[in-house]
Image (tube, rainbow, N blue to C red):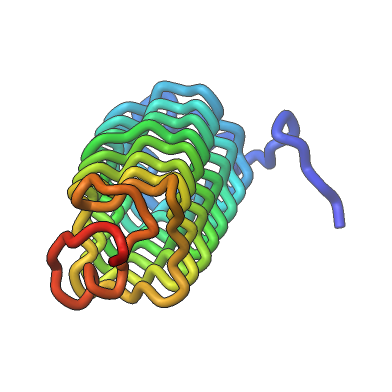
Length: 206
């Protein structure tokens, strides 16, 4: 198998990258493995685009549309995604470490095995999302919504869950500890099953 470096991007990928930079849009484009690190893509339309394994580290995606985009194993570490629409996106194994966001829409996204460690995700919408095995340790999730989300085996150790909504979420195997801030602002471990079943915010386990 030939491994192509970012500097040797195939012609089609290069053309799609140039289109994105020129028009701030590349709907349904093949950008798999393309280097977009540190670029200003504010408000860009990348709906249905293939960005699997793409390098978006440190990029600015504020208000961008990535509806149903493919971002499997992409690198978005340190990216700014406030207000971005990532609903329905395939983001399995994506690197979201230290991402900065407010009000990002991750509704119905597949975030299995995603790494959100140390991210700031206040007011994010993850309703109906799949987060099985995801790492959300030390993540700020203030007032984020996880209604009906699959949170099986998610790591919330050290996370800020103040005012987060876990109504009807699957919380089997969820990990919290004394460094976790529960929805009622009390220290963990948090009673996730009660939070999921009732939609209330009782906080720490009694």
